Image 1 (tube, rainbow, N blue to C red):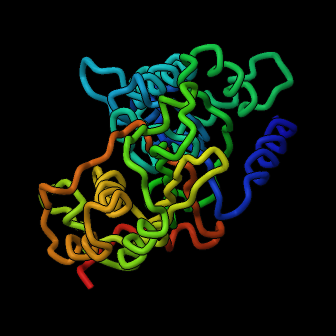
Image 2: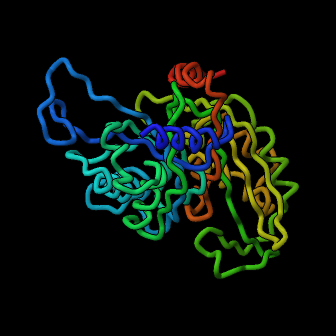
Length: 326
């Protein structure tokens, strides 16, 4: 047991501070009053739990988004079912994710946490000499479909919360315009447009949106939710194959915010709108029917960043506070 614990610690320590590629969070489904072996637990006895982090990637093409929905295939539903099977949980596994991607959106970098019964978790290797993390990876690979891959399992540091401890999320948007090579093998993650886009004009239109602002014009409203976000970067560049790649980084995003931001800049690149048009829309703080929300399949969550371990708890408290309009 001591050897396995040391291996687990090394796996977790191998993830660079402040970085996380992917992840999911869930709670191990053990009903109160029951232990994993089936015996009744006394009222004053508390189950020992461990918080884990999973790193995963998925092709969002055939999913109705991340969040579980009755009768629909979702990433959370598929992964939750796999984890429930793996851990032999009495109740379905509940997942908490760093970024709730929409239908058709992909992810290479998604971070999350889960709290599991430590006794059950340490039992995953069985009679093998693998660590629980290694056993979980191997067994999940045999359960999950090919469009979802868990790349890493590790023990989370104290104070870690996949959603609230995150400093930023980085998304990428891919567009093949008239000047790009259209690769049919990338059709699931690249939007094809007939227009020729001016990358310099798109960058000029994107730059004024960076900063702490109210992005209500680019978000689907939710009752009681703030639309104030800090946009850290919004930039464009052509790759070697001519495909235009947009980088969008913020502390957090509203529903459909990234695709609406892209949709406000593409007409500028195509010469149909002025460079200051996206900034005017943002300042109006109201949805504009002329802003097209771009297709989901061009978007991918690439990275989620976190502060050093000793600042995780403080960051979680800060992120839970309501952002106000500057």
